[in-house]
Length: 413
Ligand SMILES: Cc1ncc(COP(=O)(O)O)c(C=O)c1O
Image (cartoon, rainbow, N blue to C red; front, side):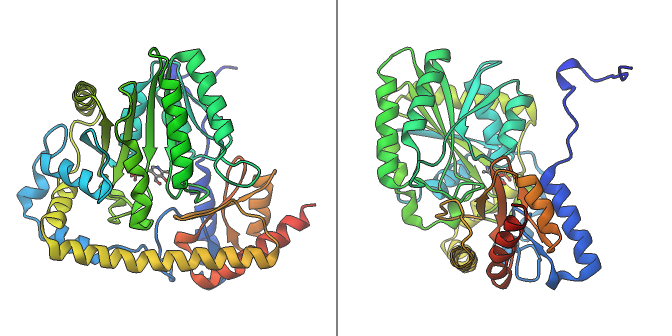
């Protein structure tokens, strides 16, 4: 018997429980039953302290709480406050601003930026290219807008960026569509923690330039830098390589206040565009501003005002950077501890260079994740393995988890 439905045809989608939230709920239950100390909840994609409490940057919230009611309550301009865009550009590139025309449009977090890139730079039914390890919501956002995700292999045999697979997949896509939106999540990729090296960036640039020689090709390189603020400043060096590209290569970059300012729920970010052609950037600003009006109108003014205050005032900015640096160090130590313990336990992990997550390849991730709950270890099963959130787990737990994962992996053989 078919089920009666009121939803439009395109909105009838498989009802799936969100795996991340599902696993998280199981972890919460275990914590209630057995106590926080005994449970390793590595499902959460936010920075937590050793007691499992969400880290919030006091220096940032002090600014937010000092805003006037009007600064918080007023609408922001449709494309975002101009000063906010200016500082979002500055915060993203720091000393590594590429040459070219640059502008931006405010969005609700990096997610809003991804949405605008998908909608404005691909056509209905198009395929979008990303790596085979990817942040699952890319899939949801693509299908929400009637696009599909296709993938290249992230790693080659030496666990470096698989340029060959990238080149082949991009070539195939351009042959088919003449337009390719590439979603590249680097540095500090979610879920693996991989970052392209500068030499990989240079080769990737050459590949893009080669494809751009066919004047009919349109290449849109979307760089998702959600975890950029938890990398070293020098890791922004690749931005310089985005200078002076042919006009049929448009670079889009997402700015987000979620992680770098602990403003996850305040929903503020921006989509930035970089091009050697002024008209392309004017068009970018127009199409994305139109989308803002058409989807969510305008963004969260209080968050924009906060960024402006931070960047206008050297002392406040210094305080924010210092507070962030402290947590960056904690994250680094947790990740290093996990990697060292994995080595000692003989647990193979994906090559990690930075960020909130470490991934463990496995051919039956669901079963392994379930098995791990017997040891009170909660992780997120992905298509190609497990995601362990070092951002959410104490050093002590980062040390003990790899051996437990290895043990449960062996028990499944
Ligand atoms: C890879 C990646 N991109 C984008 C985002 C978007 O986050 P937000 O919309 O909160 O900026 C996230 C958040 O977890 C992420 O992991």
